[in-house]
Length: 588
Image (cartoon, rainbow, N blue to C red; front, side, top):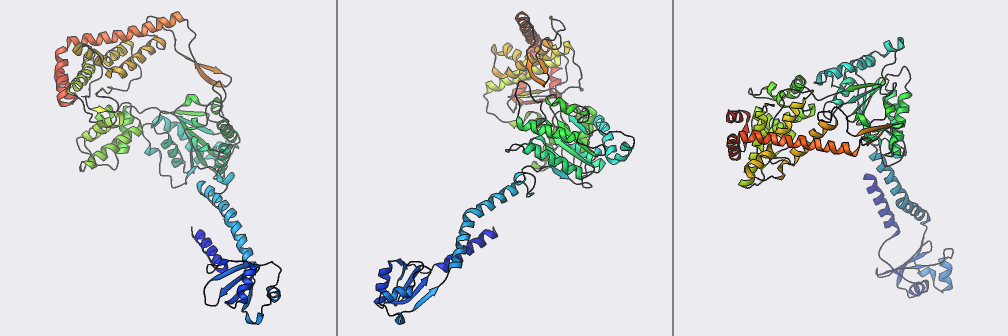
């Protein structure tokens, strides 16, 4: 900005030198007549321009003459006595030439400099690596010694940490491996759902090994210019190699590592970037102490070439934390937060089945926010309970409902809860008709334990519980509502899996679902299973039979417990929420 102001000042100064008071343009003949009249006090010749000033300090006139013509000769030819004229001659050719050059610079050079500055600024001021820095890697560098995250800061992934200890040992002592002729893993792929700590675990590996950590998302390789992705990959690996021992971390590698070819076509820039990464990993020398870590939650989409030995030859699977892992995660995220004595961490861990590490951290943060908003000095169990609901279901919404709508919702949720209780499934934790997210109400039933398998009888009971809301509507109101849409979708999907994948129907243990086609280019598309139309019709009948059986089973349970259904629904419509103790008391 300073330089722009300076240039503007110079241009203004030049304009002041070449300009002056406003003047009237006249012909050379008219100028000579005015000089003859004796009303002109001063005649100034500037190159081919003649400037006349009147005697009384009035108007100024300008006229043009031929470039090489002498003003003295012109005045002599006009019979003007030169001795009576105040004649001045100024030579501004050099200044004019400078002004012309500056004008060209301002119109052409300055915009060009601005464009160059803009691209350098947008590329982080690096100025190198491809056109205006586009090809330079934008990877974030975590400097050795300043990386404070270690394995102690990561909980709930003990098996994964054990798998990565060898990588840490290699980065600390690469010479031991090289002496024995061992080739350390060049790439480790972290596979798991979102929020389980893949990125945190990668940082912890760098922290334990005390080496530089280069972090970059898969999508950051791609840019609007073709070839930028491959250029950035080359720059990233070259920078890491210069650091000696280092870790390269590529988050969401599925953005560039998807399978190439196949019937779904390809993406030239993405494939070019992937090819360059493969070339770089193949180019590691035997004494190179650079390890590539990558994370994805879609391992099924990755190109098989990434998985072969010498590239990402190790795969570490991360899963949602189980009960004990959730306790450890909660301990880490609870540090630095004051909690009331009524917080039972075992209960919180049991209550949060299906929560990822990120969900648990978010839950405690929301609880802390709620405590601060309510001017409390510590976080209590109610704050955590509300935060858990907010994380999974969304914030509570006070929608305007008629009494009839509230009663319908109350019967619907009571139907779910009663069938669940009678079928002896997991205990009901909370029943509410307070709207959250897209739901008008909810019945919260956290599992007693982390389940690995479910039996056919258990699935049938769960289907009946899910249809409890629709069954209650039919029994009480003799009509049905749209409120059971998600329940029907859930039950239908369970029934479909039971028939087509799990062999839990009268059709027997056969797989009838869609198959993944595998060809020379990798997984290309999902194709329907090669079964007859007659068999497909039987599949549909089996699904329908399972869903209807679940609905009938729920209706039988609710008809036998109609009195309790009415009591719970009316109390729920009045109080809006029932906790586990209130519900258990009503059920006797």
